[in-house]
Image 1 (cartoon, rainbow, N blue to C red):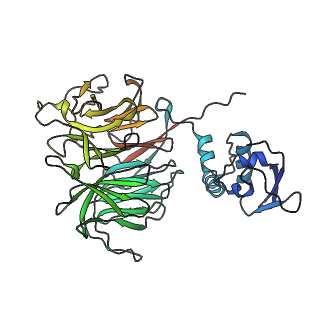
Image 2 (cartoon, rainbow, N blue to C red; image 1 turned 45 degrees about the horizontal axis):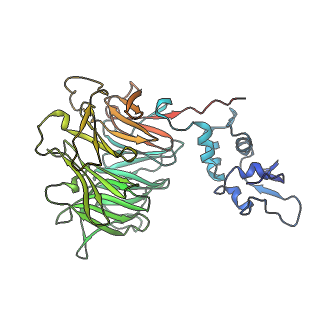
Image 3 (cartoon, helix red, strand yellow; image 1 turned 135 degrees about the horizontal axis):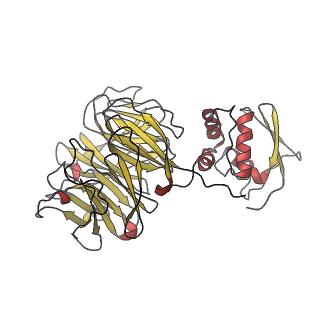
Length: 450
């Protein structure tokens, strides 16, 4: 982008602001100001040399956002409520700029506890999912509470008496929820929601459409479980039906139409899968059925292109030990391995280059020894920006480097054990089960060196 010296004049709510095209171009093509420039980022002029652009918005907030474009720094005067500034940033398409200035790039070793929010149904929180823009949704039994990146709660998504099994963000405006099969009275002409999966508006809670399972040209009732999606807009879900549609379904997440189905092979429980993960490099889907839902653990990679299981691991026939009871699993494509964790937070690694490879357990990460407490929150895993995260009791451990060395630990004494956590939008969210509190962890922005 060439340096522009053209003057730009704005009249915002009666106040005049003058700046350059270069400064305004920092807003980006997707901002409100993007239409003011041509493809070469040259200011589009009218017949007059200088055009005054009128915007009927808050001038004080515009001044703060204009300085953000000029300097890359966010300074909010005490007379401007942050929520008002965030609302104006959304209007101008500058929310990404505000978030980048408010907190730094995500690094598990630099996170600090920014805020804790009390939930709506004490003791009933089951899952938390980070949104792509720094918001989140929290499942409480048959309800999903949605929070935007300003941590303001929107209208909850209610599934009546259907228990939420999983949720996944399609984008910052839409969330897909999987649930058990059950009938619900529709509203607004949306018809009956009988469980399975539905796409809902994140801000309104409105059901937009359902994802159907069809078999022999008939729509089947089914319970949807774990969810995942691919980079080419495919949505995957484990499915458990009444006839022979047990397995993994695939839908077009834009249209909601079913495009494929992987029927489970004999001896495997794909329809009861606890975790799905799409691997972008290999175009395969990781499917994990974990203990204690089943007596045995299954981890496999499915290739939908030729309907084959290209890699698999199971503890069937292995010595029965606590260490082999896998609680969570996650694939790490950069190292051609799968990481698993047991109930004592021993980390295990399996090499994807060998079929049915063994687990190499490491106890370096063990946070407690001996017997687990009653009704434990099982460990969960996440991988983000080359770092591995694992929850255990009331803390989250961060691992890094080629040997996955423990580098830091995130802990908040309020709320009890962590039942779930999620990373997205440069934030980490952790949900505590005992008090139904969820924490928001952020990285502070780098200091400005003058």
